[in-house]
Image 1: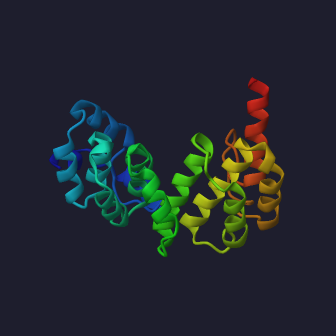
Image 2: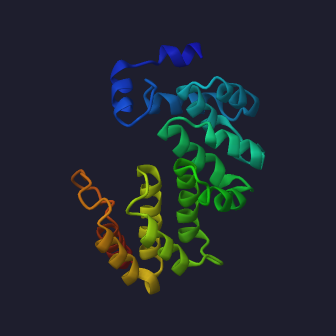
Image 3: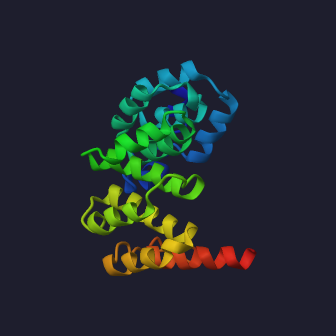
Length: 215
């Protein structure tokens, strides 16, 4: 904790604050520290227990993702207070855990929109990597009915799922683009030069163009 405190950078804290996070450690330095520590599950659990954002991010980087139980991950996700901790926990730990599918189903139906967003993030991952058994038409039905009025975090995750369906599954592409066009979610999202817009119709069209260009 003392070493993390020594890495505190007011400029980094200000940048992070604008994204809803509450730590002042540059992520590159955090990753360098994690590389030096390597995997240490016991230390990771102790760092997580501090409830400090930088410590929790470090914990995620040095933990053993498969060592956590289903209920343990559920409690951890519900206690992840900041966007970065939430995103890293889902992407670096839950996706690599044997309980990920069980949690995907439970979280997707959760009344808490932040928890539900984690379920939708896991669904987007399955759409891309393991779509067998998924009801893609059913997912599009839910997105069409609920995405426009969903809270920000949940809306973002649903939008990614919509885009992934359109990118990866040609048979559903036209409908995915049509839903995106009609709902207009993230259509005006500011996008840096050289980056792809998160607006689903643009995102789908650009990624398909790249795939076809490289094949």
